[in-house]
Image (tube, rainbow, N blue to C red; front, side):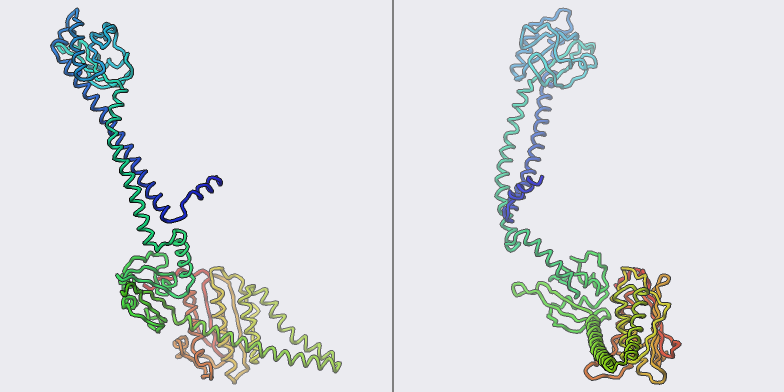
Length: 552
């Protein structure tokens, strides 16, 4: 099989022109072959029926002749008269034979006079003699296989007194049919030549339409285009000059709330975005360069480029991306800077401690040096051991460890509830989103505890995976949140922190992103006053979220 496959691959034309010629020609040849077979069969059936009808008509005419009826009805028929009559009619009608036989099957006429008086051969005369039927049949007689018409002969009392059989040899019938089929065969041959010329013309036309590209090149470009479009996080929509969608990627469906499995290609923009202002942007035909626009109550960065062909606008390509994506990148950059600063401070702190240990060892104060080492290592070892058992997820453990180090740097006590456990996190739940939510809430708690000087700064974290939800409680010893402000703290740009030179854009983004991610995970967040005196954020996220509904 492999060998034959290689042979076929080598025989397959490498160019689109050759493939189109062969494919079109094969299709036409198959159609011509089927049509020719159908016509040949029809011609054969019709011709055979006509010859059989002719034989039957001749037999019926002879069976009604008074000479034949009188001869068969007499006790001693004159075979010479019947023979003369049958032969004269046979010569006029070009029949192979005309046999007149009595009710016992004895011949009264035959092209070979020596067979007169003998029994009729073929065995197909009984329906005529027994039932009085007139019919055509195929049988093998003394002259060979033949198509014959057999008709009973009745006397004036309607008694069956014999029959007449008129036959044509099947060999002669086949020659007649072949003559009838010769003319359609000529037409089919001419159509094959026309098909060859048409296949060549169609192949040239298709080659021009594909800009000279071969099928493999077109398929490769199509696959590469789809892969590129689906790898882009920005929404991309292409619209033709008639306002029909020609291309839309999954990101565009997601950003606009459309069904990600629905077929939208070919539909009008007015139908797909019937209840959205977005459709007006896709029908302007004007170039829009990275403008911030409000689409379906969502802030988007929108870019639109018209498609120009022969100095006419034939469509447009638009791409857009939610503004919160850039805000998320800004937040991640801020957190990266904070982690970098934290590592720098931590490195400086450990450098000082190493110098202290070095001095204690040089002073031979070994007990004090050992006590310093044990004190520093105890806290980290107990935390690492606890996290490895209670939170066996490296990403989440890392963010907790990072915030623990940050708290030590800020001189804020970090309490991790010993009853906490976070083992059962389903694979369908994004841990990256959990890290972003948890990191922002812990950052807010640290800043609130550090900024309030009325009580010792402290934060506490509790988490559990018991039941169907993941529960997180983040508590701080800060001022707390006024109930009147709880409705606005998740609004973008709203912040209680004072402006810091060089980083004004970071304020008012953290809790906004937290709220966005919690909504995506179908979670709930409540704010109350905790036992430490400050704010208590209680977060509940279902392990298995129901599918989100479309906005349109």
